[in-house]
Amino acid sequence: MKRLSEKLVQSWTSLGPKFLPFADAATPDLPLSRLLRLSLFQVSVGMALVLLIGTLNRVMIVELGVPASLVAIMVSLPLVFAPFRALIGFRSDTHRSELGWRRVPYIWLGTLVQFGGLAVMPFALLVLSGGGQSADAPAWIGQASAALAFLLVGAGVHITQTVGLALATDLAPQESQPKVVGLMYVMLLLGMIVSALIFGVVLEEYSPGRLIQVIQGCAITTMILNVIALWKQEARDRNRRFKNPDQPTFKQSWNLFCQGDHAIRRLLAVGLGTMAFTMEDVLLEPYGGEILKLSVSSTTILTAILAIGGLIGFGLASRILSKGADPFRMASIGAYVGLPAFIAVIIAAPMASAYLFSLGVFLIGFGGGLFGHGTLTATMNLAPPEQRGLALGAWGAVQATGAGIAVALGGVIRDIVNYFAMRNMLGEGLADPSTGYVAVYLIEIVLLLATILAMAPLMKEKLSQRKLQTS
Image (cartoon, rainbow, N blue to C red):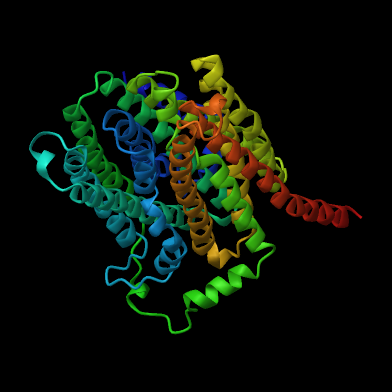
């Protein structure tokens, strides 16, 4: 029996490097088992994202009848905290701790904030829906409490993810750091896939009580996963009890970062591409439910399809970039893939095809995976060694800010366009509930084209550098 167990373990570990993207990031000092345990914080983040941008927005818009613009604003509330990701990364780099830790206190703080938001969210949604004993409560109480819950969850996600990625790069040797960060994002996508599938099964027969159980289960699971992820990961250093007088300020570090090769243009491309791939986040499930008449369970599984596409995109990009491909070109290819993806989603409505809609959602995830990996790899490769945390924070801040703005605009634009369309103010042919959704998808196509244009000079410079090296 012991020999059989050893063979099973050896077989399982041998599968990892073959089929799990970035599994080759493991080293003798940082084995794959430790990396995967650390990545559990990304699983909890993925679970929260599925809940916020997937399940809850569809339930609030379709089942609870909350205006899409209000839901979009609530989902995008973490935008308020997103710009501070770079500052969080910098502060965790320079944190002074009596216990000798610099990353753990911030990750634990983020975990508590995320748990708190999930803990109060069910009661906020009950008041927001106006059902039962909360029917007599003023509307602003439900809106304010729901907004607070969303803000807390989003703030916890930003803190945990930013500092968790910095901790992962601390543990890995410099040559493996981009692969380690890539592995963390693969685990984020896996967490989204598994969570979406579980939510879809549990919410097969929707009821407010079942939704409350799901949210409370997410709160407990978040705490458990993050505690396991942090256990004995960061070594304690007594030197961190004292402040380094030569440590540069955040402003000085940020100015040094901005002096890098096309740093501002890179961040601009990240922002445009992120907006292009996320403006539909709050609308995909309502689009499937309202226009294509899909059930809550079916539309929740769409989030899993989106994450599966992103996972495959990350895996393919990993193989290609490991051979020395240009990460900016990889990001541009991802933007090109997004063009037919949104076209498929648009024409799925007049064709009443759920399969075409699912294909479009998959391609959105696939293109987003290529784009995300390309920009992430470029950021890691071009960042100075002493500014890894700041670089990750800046990349994450721009990405989160772009996503927040896009989600809010998506819901607002959908409501405004539908307001005019359903009153025949845009013409009789456009007097359809799908008009608002289609308008948002067309804007995303325009943003993808703008992203491609913004990335072009970066690819040209890379090509010129290669020619100089070969000559």
